[in-house]
Length: 88
Image (cartoon, rainbow, N blue to C red):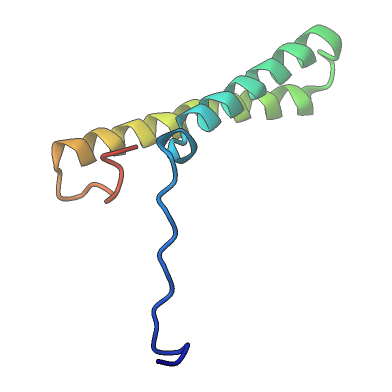
């Protein structure tokens, strides 16, 4: 049997702790709001940083909301839901 005939082994599944994106999304959103707090305390006059950190935090909340909505739809079995989110 040659090397080309054999199929490569499948990689093992990631542990749930590493496959779950919720801690990363919530952690990133919290860091944006922490950055906003730092800007408000130390450099309030810099409106670019103020609006950038505020936008990052708000977009993180919106992004988590969309993710949560899709996960609920997948668990419900909705036809329009993304696939593979039931176990996440």
